[in-house]
Length: 134
Image (cartoon, rainbow, N blue to C red; front, side, top):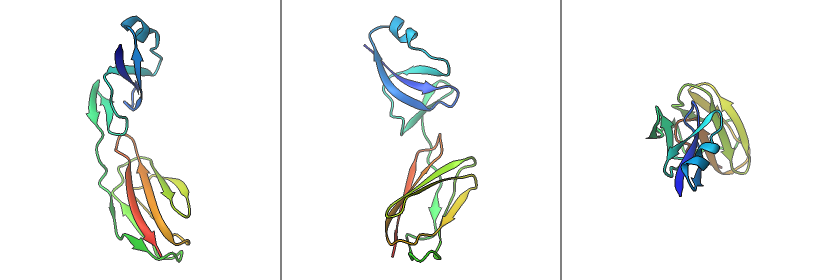
């Protein structure tokens, strides 16, 4: 059995781990825009860069506070996004998703509760900021 991890070309984003009985079957499963790299690799932690499995880097995120008022006025600021399009997902009593092209985001909430802000931009590792709104 040959274990490989499928990845996107040219981004290097890992897709899934696959097993093939032999090289001929592996070759039959190659698709345009995708390739395989030997072994099992976690897509949350690694990507392929210049043909080598590489650890995904961390973002340099900072926030100005860990709690805000749930009044629609108090602002939570998160900065340190890498250049490029970043996807933000707010998960809690209120859920939202948006794309941010700046190096920061700022938002308010109207509903009290515990929230998680999930931030993703490939090839960086996905990160999470938790905060409370009272």
